[in-house]
Length: 186
Ligand SMILES: [Fe+2]
Image (cartoon, rainbow, N blue to C red; front, side, top):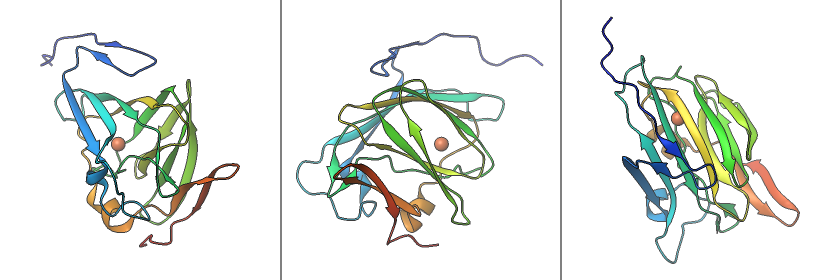
């Protein structure tokens, strides 16, 4: 087999998640999160997270890599979070490496099972195939992590937009609380 890509190196800032070179950035604002929080956001339409991509061809012979920088904050009592998704190709897995800040990785199956794992500097989270995943910033600093996933995985945001996750993460008097999502549609 003749390889179709040449080897390359990207420099990653382990504190900020910045990539050099920065090739492609996806920005998500509060207005991109319509219907995802328990209450609708009001006020400034700020950027709540950015995904910096190391783009490679979207096929299962390659590994897509990215860093995510998720700002701290709340909508109502619900911490800032990513949209979350299943992979379009359901059985594709993903690995997260925590770089800075503190948060939670909320995962769910289509059958309604859920799991919540910590993200902090040095954590390696394994997201098996079939599990939707969303990160939540429960700290006061940006939550920064690196992710790598099978190249042809694709993103299915629609299922989460329609059904939500089984649990939500709320700010409580003594820290984050993981509680059932009253709007979850099985
Ligand atoms: Fe993913």
